[in-house]
Amino acid sequence: MGYHHVPIADLEQHDDRAADVRSISGAVGLDHDGSPLGLRVYVLEPGEQAPLTYHYHDEQTEVFYVLEGELAVETPDATFAVGADEAFVAEPGSPHRAHNPAAADAPVRTLAMGAPSVVDHHVYDPDEE
Image (tube, rainbow, N blue to C red; front, side, top):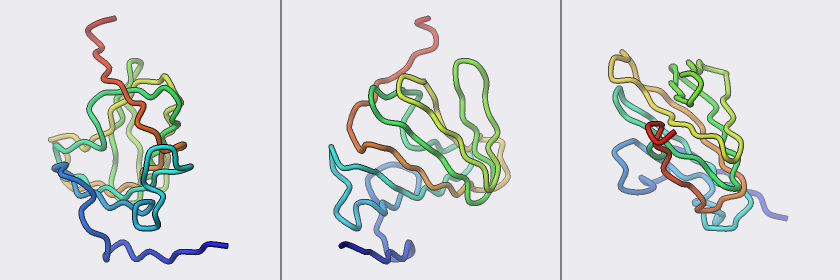
């Protein structure tokens, strides 16, 4: 059996992105291509996006659960305002871009989950349709 207690405040910045990214799955050794789950906490200041530009995944389902604030998730059909205690799910093949709009007056804190944890994202350009 394996159990892990992970205080988020103890985690280091995950990568070189502008947003504050803390990898829970990385702290327990699951943050690699092919693991069952990628799990990160993002704090997005106004104008920041997480985790990637407008994109879609071949296999991965991506979920954003908003802890504080309001996350904007842009899709080809609409832009969704996802508030605290709400989740947004993007199934494989579904283009999306999660961000905190530049006009926002507060940061957004969100828990982002991807399963499986695979590097299968592709840039989506809505102008190519």
